[in-house]
Length: 541
Image: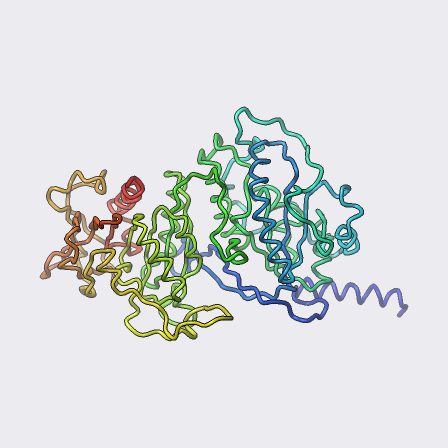
């Protein structure tokens, strides 16, 4: 075999090995560990046709990780888009500065501007990495999982949200100067170059940020879809992106809700998402002009499919109420490593309303303090079912094995609990629950409460809950707050009536609690309406 043929054979073998196993590449000393929290929507393993939201913690090697900054141009044809890039860019620069110091490769990808960078070291580095194998894998269409899935927003008009609409064109010449390019960074708008570069450097983990998610970030040759095709462990940094969406187009929601809807699509059909907090240690980025109320959904329970029913409810709220729904998630299991941990609780720092369905979790003190601090602000809380015993693990939990903690620094011997949350915040008196019935729970409106805002659109007639083996009536009588106003009660045969829905008028803020929240409850029109009313009521306080 000739040297030329042998070289071609070996080159092809290396490419084949890499794309079959993206971790294959040049051997190197390990970099700094990166802890990342990834959010994804996947099919339920128990309820057909239902999507659940889940969180996964991954530990990455910084030298096997890259960040691609997509199309953060110096000027866009849409003035509004240009303004948002200028607002976004400093936070992008902050994140990549932190990442660069940890050993993460930064790739600047301002499309159609490569001539501007022809003499930059990073441009030459990328050009020398062109991969024919990658070029043969890259495509322009959607992934197989997206086939026949409706696109969440109408972007057919170009997506300019300004009035009057800006004239389309290509005014960009380079990346915004608000983002620093260092000599060790790469510069490319070509997926085959970038894929080849990642092969050479043994990079497997890829974060995309920049604009615009519904167009360039997802669809470029270096975008999310093609990084998936190239076998990369790709993630969208969801708080450092924007969309081209005109709110005067379908589905006729605020511009920033368009971002939320595209994020849902990506998490379901393309790849996970993360937030910049994993690098900065602070709350995630939010555009100043995004005035939507923030709803923080805190979900960590294993019995009632809250990570399925609450995201579906949040999707309805996005479309109908103009709110911003964020999620802090724990594992939906009863036991095992990582159960006593809830990711992304930093969303409480911006929240206007916290929706809590958590069951018996102890937490690291820094996480529990975020919940305590939120409760002290007097901002409203909506608690569902297991929220009454959310932070009461019924046992002392050692701070090892069950929770994810920082790799350095001292940690408490035991995780933090808050069993008084039921009495102090909810005003309840949870004492377990009655057994299942063959007839279901009969729910009744408390006399005199028929016209309360929480019951708007709900008939004053009794209604019966589903007959399910774990759809049981909670024991909460007598309630332990003099400020409680009960609106709905539940009754089963041969047992006293129990409070089911109430408002706790705390001196520092209102709390609504209901012992309903079983996945079958969401099939009841009455419960669904009560939940919509609760959101309206609490946001108006």
